[in-house]
Length: 117
Length: 113
Image (tube, rainbow over the protein chains, first blue to last red):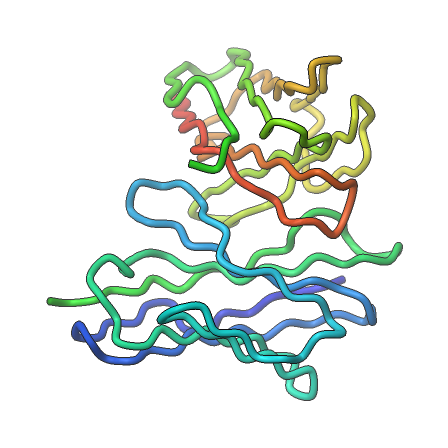
């Protein structure tokens, strides 16, 4: 069975600092997809990024960047120059493509990010 | 706004009762997923329907059931409710059957008293 670990339960930084959220995953499948979602205080889950297991290129979107390393089974998320509006719970998730694994998204426990003004 | 709608937003009921949660997927999406978010278990996948057919089951209790209708909206039925069923229930939708981005609705907050 697959597993997603977000070891950081809560991170608190001051506005404008850079912050990295860690995500480590476990799966025996070779084809899989990784996701990050944001859950702001209002409660909805907002999609941020989707990455397949064959694409290890890092991605940057504005102040957000993602580092995917298959060698360490990690898919870390960095926010540069953090802002108060970035305060939320961030979830890393995994979906297996091939048969044999659990269906649906497997989520980590989430990291609560607090950006202090 | 993801385009996925869920009703009701909040639901308060008593133990032993039965409730129905409703979800309308994004326009054009064929796949609907249900997830439960609780403090104890975190976010857990319950069940998936694709174009009206059940496609996958996760950690869904036997007291829970779901269906997807011809217009592609879906309902999650929860019966014989227990205190532990109190949670945030999310619906998500995607175009493809698998390995596609899932867009989540705003959720239904269920409180069982």
